[in-house]
Length: 490
Ligand SMILES: NC(=O)C1=CN([C@@H]2O[C@H](COP(=O)(O)OP(=O)(O)OC[C@H]3O[C@@H](n4cnc5c(N)ncnc54)[C@H](OP(=O)(O)O)[C@@H]3O)[C@@H](O)[C@H]2O)C=CC1
Ligand SMILES: O=C(O)CCC(=O)C(=O)O
Image (cartoon, rainbow, N blue to C red; front, side, top):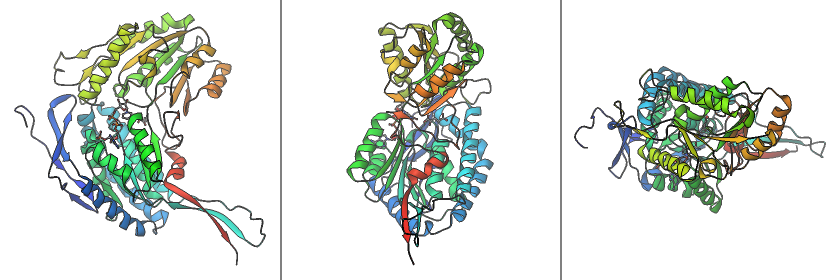
């Protein structure tokens, strides 16, 4: 530890077979605050393949009894976990803000969403799992049932440290699977606090295990482990491809949620104030670090100048700072790496000839020198082939693209490898219908921002944004179970 680092920290352990356990490596990583890199939020285990193996063995053994419980009994554990998470909401949200930087109201909202997700899937334990299908044999009964996969591996990113783990773990458990969870190392303290809620709810030992450590060791270990029958992953498209290739190679099921390059189309008949509000919120909340964040703003030429003027006025009002401060609207990037990635995309935009209208620089003044802050940034004169119009930046950067018609807007909107979410602002029913029909995205939103996922609805992308599967809502059953078709004759 270097002089000047705060030392008010705890060490967080792995959770394996119902016990909090140190890694066999004897090593820890530190998790620091991106608002002030000198502040250590906690120490987390730097685990080994042997730790992972113990967790998988514990999960495999525990799953045998867990799957035999009724759905209602499994649901009771999730209801209890929800109540505990709700009671600890303020502490967990504050930890999230300190660990990855999003503003405290956003962190509280996300933690409350975690509570709601747990309650939703707790109820799912009482809902139907199959259908009766008429057999061609009039004396037989034919129906479908659902069976769990077995042990599932969950690999999550740092940008939603509560909601994403919970929306993967809760359905995995309710449908009778046991879980080995590897959170992003960046937000492993928040993850440990979430797992404490499950532990305190009395979940049987081994049903849920958490192993922290490097993606290249624990994440790759999950990909390769023969006893892990399904892998759910959210993160970069590079790692997502590794998950897919590794899973296919050994016949495991997999599910991927990866990037987005989400457009908002602003039609000439749009309510411009609403469109500006949604572009700012959709693009810059959470410092642009959402896979559903708006990054391309495609505006019809007739209202382009007025929209731009209103947008810049709003962007220039944004207060950037430590997410724990009540007047902060936008926190820092989640890490130094993330900051550097964002700054390099901004440089690339300038080199390629886009015009910088706002922001563009790291912020180091006003007490922010120890954090990873970047100005909210807006480019114009962006051509659809530029890198900043094609690649996911995962930062507070908006690219304005001027078009003449809605047809052209849709063509530009679809012109990336991604297809996660998309919005249009218009009053015209014809525009709305064209957008719903022609926009290649898993989530299309009319007169609402591109970010805004509801836990009871299917979520996932088209093209290279996902593995073409869906998470959340009742769609989760498709990944976490296999269908068994049953034919019975007396
Ligand atoms: N779709 C989304 O929601 C997200 C997209 N991203 C995109 O990805 C970019 C990079 O972010 P980054 O955090 O590096 O994303 P990663 O894809 O590297 O991380 C996501 C998760 O995968 C783990 N991981 C890393 N390497 C491997 C591996 N070889 N095998 C298995 N698991 C692995 C990570 O572990 P570890 O803790 O060691 O990093 C983490 O738990 C961002 O800039 C953004 O563009 C990032 C996060 C979320
Ligand atoms: O917008 C949301 O709420 C979810 C976004 C998401 O899944 C992600 O950023 O990884």
